[in-house]
Length: 206
Image (cartoon, rainbow, N blue to C red):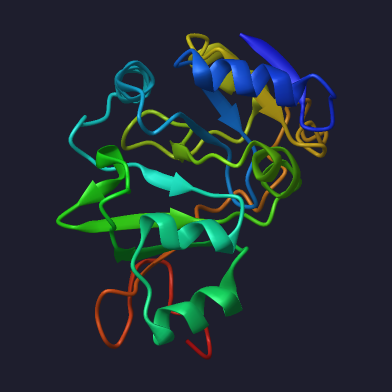
C-alpha cells in the first residue's frame, strides 16, 4: 500500500492512474475515512466488498467533488435542489432518484446515495480529476469505522493507496485519527415528503 498525504503533489497523478487501472484507495472525508475506487470498475467494487465482508448487492455511496456534478447522476426538483445547496458540501448523504448515468453499483430501487464532502481532498484533487468515487466507511462489515491510520494499513493492506488527511495523524495515545469528525455521515432520504433520516437526525430547517 502506498501512503501519501492529501497535500503531496504526487496524489493527483497517483490517483488518476489508480482509477484508470481499477485500483482501490482509502481517502479522507469530513466525517470518517472512506474506502473505494471507480464506481464502474468491477474489480475495485468486488475487492472492497470482499475486504469488508460486505454483501456485494449492497449499494455504495457515490462521492462527488461538487454540487454541479450531482445532476448527472440524480434527478433533482426545486425542493431537493434547495436542500442540496444549503447542506452541501457537508456531512450528509442524500438519497435521490437516480438517472440512467448513475453507476449500477450505487443504485438500489431506482435511488442513488450522493455525498459531497467538505474536505480539502475532494475540493481540490477530486474536483480537478472531475470523476466520482464509490465509497463506504473503512471497517469490517458490522463493526465501527476505523479511526487509526495504522489499523487501516494493517487491516486493509490489500488496498493500493491511502490518502492521508492533513490532520490524519493527530497524536492520540500514539495512534493516528481521521481528519473528519469520526462520526459517519447523516443519511437523508429526499425521495419522500417529508424527508426521512435513515441515519442520524434531520437537520434543523430541512
